[in-house]
Image (cartoon, rainbow, N blue to C red; front, side, top):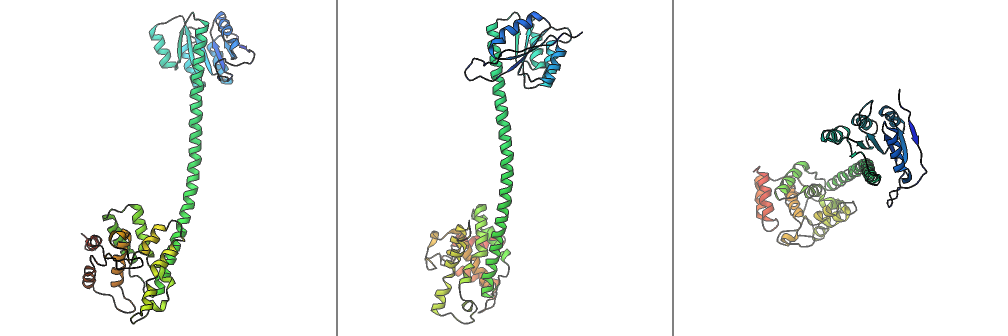
Length: 363
């Protein structure tokens, strides 16, 4: 016949250590009534909620219904030993601190208790109340610390999950924004080309050459992206120039030349309205600067000219010479190479031009 389950309640209070004020429940398990009563007397004034059971089976039933923060069990009991009981208790309430009392202090029992039952502390009988209370207090402080850490981890995981969700939403919005920017780029590129009636023969091929030149010159991903955009948009400023000038079959007047030279500045102004295009706008502004300082619009010289502008300048001239224009037909590749070489160190950066030829020749 099972022993009677006894439930002891004490007045509500606080454990008397600093801010250690949480009401804790302790489950006492021992088949000897005198031991249960002695333990109850030791803890009753410390503000704990005390649960009592005089056998392990009833103690397990209690754990199925009640939350226990600490379980203090005898080792030798008729129906099952304390280690077996605490192992079962660990399955029901894994967070509870488990302590065992025993008059037997064999090392094999202690090792088994720690390994099999996940025991926090092995306490020998007879005990001193003050020392036992200190051990219990330390155990519950550990419980509080572990559960605080657990809550923090759960809170962090929850926030990380939320942040991941927010990041996905932001990523989707960024994708839509970038899609809109790409559409704007395509529109500007189309407008600049239709303005002159001289569509680029193969913009993707020019872009491929440009990106390879950029990689070999040590550009990172951001630089390669800006270079690609600048290649597509370098003549955006054409939309602000009278189309009659671009499509004129004869020579331009001095005033018309001045007007044409405005297109890099106009291009910069247009692109500056697009968020994140400041660097691209700068590249576009300077893509007609000459290496010797005789170009436009600012007469920059040598390394004063942005590297990406120097690359775009060569690609622009190469593209122009290899495609039909209103005032001439496309030139043969040998003639194009000759013109480019004549501009080495004058119009073009020698190092960039050499790298361009290396890519063009597939080296």
